[in-house]
Length: 243
Image (cartoon, rainbow, N blue to C red; front, side, top):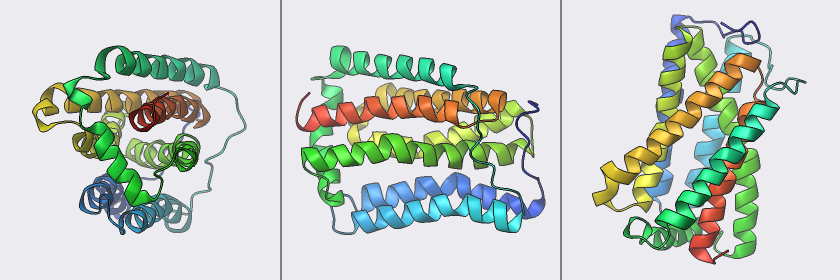
């Protein structure tokens, strides 16, 4: 284990909260992204679910486990790898989209689905979408790193070895993306598009676990995650208004 990343304690009382943290994002995603899709309740459902999700780790770690809140570390270690890998991811994403997938049957229904989601969130104009894009790529990506790497992976790290902790946390991170991708892609492409793209998400999560383990800092994983989300929001903007 890297001496830069000390795991949280691993006691039986922590296990239920850890399991809840792994499954809650998928349940919440199904509720706000599928059940309330395009409806007036979508934004409240999304907001409440995110507040609950991102409040859980800090409340448990700080107040139940009595562990200091060491999320932010003043170090530049990992930033170069985060930037380099992030640029590779966004570059690969945009090449795949603009040169291979755009205009194909795989994404034929995606613009209509995205329009419905944006209507439900009240973000159905270019300006509002840009604000949403900034939130998702800058703030939400950091919150996800705090949740999946700082809490879930690190808590699992106290129970098991690095490889198992990385695998389980990355699959948990992938799970709610399966629901999102499944909403955009036709059902006949579930095995040939939804699952492969979801596995790419899991691989990204595993890479961020490794980077976090190596440096003890979330800044590198967050920077890479930021660029990955930039590629997604560029794709979304092109769906709606073209770039």
